[in-house]
Image 1 (tube, rainbow, N blue to C red):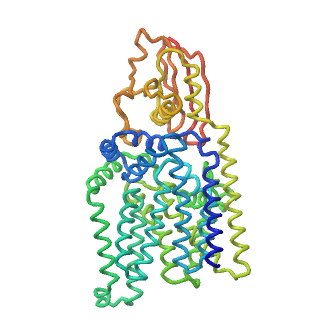
Image 2 (image 1 turned 120 degrees about the vertical axis):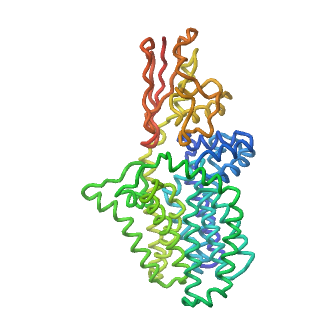
Length: 502
């Protein structure tokens, strides 16, 4: 494919990918993780870093998001547009990495198009979280490493170290990708020296890679004590459920056929749910046996496979860390491997097979959108609006931290007010996974609110999501009005607004 043709097609692919990720961008209500991002960047910078240290993620995303919101604001569009922009950058990076790896612009274009059409990838661009920053950095760091290994250029090694460290400051699952980077360098070293230890020790590749690793560690040293503390916190208490027998096949199924529910594990559903992981493993084998450059095909397969392997191993041995969305960084390389697989077809079939594959992904994307039914599931946004329509006197009390921060976001953005709603808590404390790092004393209202004689009316905002239930009312209080607002994803449940009276 000619360079000019590739550029024009790539522009179309990126524009289409961004459009797909921008469609009805604010229709789905802000949810807990996004509200966490918003609330954290509202604090003064030094306090933001200190509070981020008590959470379970590194701070780079919040630092950059803070700068973004200084320019574009903290509305839902302002928050989520950062992720959409990075998703577009990810498509460009996918083209860059794949073209460099394979030496074929057409494969780079197809890889970018497959990711653009992926509903599973798009879902992460709808959220004000660190996932699209991570996918971008995963691709750029891998691209720089591939070029550095091939060219032995110290400038490229230095750039790689900076980007790799930035990736590690974005999400801890970056370590799994960086471990895959190390395996790739080791494999390249072995292939070049054919296991001759003396040659290995004299190889510029070995010393350049060690120098880069030392630089990455040096950049990361200031955060290591915090990482150790956060890891200890996770080991003591974390919300991720234990890994199960269907966890891995379900993840692969959602990568190709995104769904908000659980794939069927009965009858024909067993076969359909197992098919994507079987297809991926066979595809990896074909790519490895194919005609692509040896370093490229091994690198792509390692980048797709190793993070899964490490996440599974750690989850079985220690605290379960296996969660679909944490493997989004591996997914991009699974789709790049798919593009490389398609490129091994006969030339006359290649364009048609690629077009059909992209069309199938768009079909699953559309099915996912229809399944979510976002327009009829207004959730916390509509609940907040309704609560302040029926609210005439007395406090507005939110009984779950998993919707409280979303409620006060909408209050600030749409009513210019963050003081009328309070979070009900009997202890005044929250676990780190419930929003403890972003809680302030001004947020809390306790059980004594029901005993204050000057309060005769109250509006409760509650949720059945995240294991929540309606707050049992004291015997001298009654419900006089109630309305329900469903959320989009099953784990979010429904939001209830109850107007109660003494």
